[in-house]
Structure formats: C-alpha cells, structure tokens
Length: 239
Image (cartoon, rainbow, N blue to C red; front, side):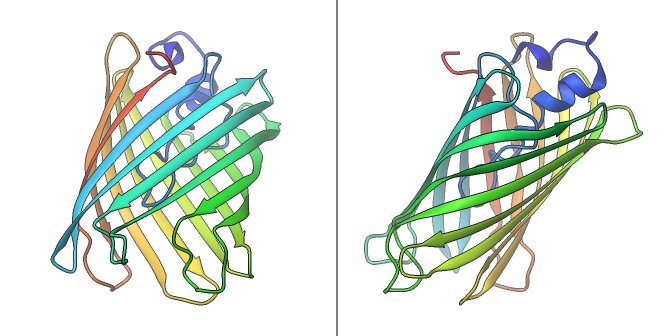
C-alpha cells in the first residue's frame, strides 16, 4: 500500500493501486484493471442492511498477489447471513488468475478467469461449482485524481445456470489521504430477476497506507429497498 501515500509518483501509478475498487460490491469483490502493487492487496468489507424488513449482514474479502507486473492471483470469498433460504445464509467464492492485456499512460485492460463456487444456486438443477470470465478496463481522466473502471463478467455453474455481472466505478482523489467513489453494480441471471445497486463511499488513508472505507449502498432497480451501511478495511497481506 505504500503507493497510496506516495505523492511523487506519476498519476498512473496511484491509479493502478486504486484499481482495487470493489471491496464493497454486493457480491464477491473484484478488482480493477490494474495489477496490485508488489506485496499484494487485501480488503475486508462488512455490509449491514435491511431487506423486506429483515436485517442482513455481508462479509467479504479480497486478496490479490502479483506475479510480476503482468499477472496476479485473486481470491474473493463472500458470505451473507439472514438470507431467505432454509439455511439462513449463502456464500460465494472465486479463485482466479488476472492477466494484464494492455497498460498505457492513461488506460489499462485485463482479463480474469477462474473457478467459481456458489452455495445456493438459483435453480435446483444447477450444481455449486462453475467458472467466471471477467474483462476489466480502467482509465485515468483529464481531471487530476479522477479515474473510471468498468468490468463485465460472465458466469456458468454446472447444469447450465448462467449469469452476467457489470460493475462501474468512478473515483476521485482530492488529496493523498482521501478517495471518493461512486459505484453501480448490475447482476443479471439468464433466468431470473435483475438487481441494480448503487453505492457511494469515502476512503480515508493513514500515514501507513492503510485505509478505512465507509458509505451507503441501496438497490435502485425498483425492487425492494436494501439500504445498507458499508465499512471496509484496505491494506496489504500481513498488515
């Protein structure tokens, strides 16, 4: 995380480090198009909200360990408690490799592929194991300290359950110790309802480079409101 506090590095350097944006997603976290810095990236996130007058609690983690500057290993588990199922919970996890396809002064493009596990598949005939393929594009903007990141993922479970996910993030860093982010998350099953959620958060970085993230998330597709409080911790493995 040292790159998060370095003010003398080029804009693209800190944008690459801030590419790990999605610790607060409404499903397992995913990173931006930039490979994590040397030493890796670790983000823990907790979400507390209410759905249909029932409180729910989400916990997710994101670990990324780079193999040089072009490839990294990514692990992203996620669990929700008080979910409307017989067990009262659900979980997902992905284990993936991320490969940089292009890195320029303003743009980064990557592809990420790996194994997927889902504890409660949407359709009874589907298995828990599957795969995910994700494309990631990120860019710094003309305004100093601003960037965007777009991700599109397709997923498939045993038995034919397929779905798509789209994540969009716009961020702005007015100073070395503050980051503002607006995010939209779309999840669309081939057979089932779509869910669109919006999130606004702030990240406060300390001198050590560790960050505390806090904000709000809500469903915006006309479905049941899911207003939630989001708290995350940013760091490096072993911090």
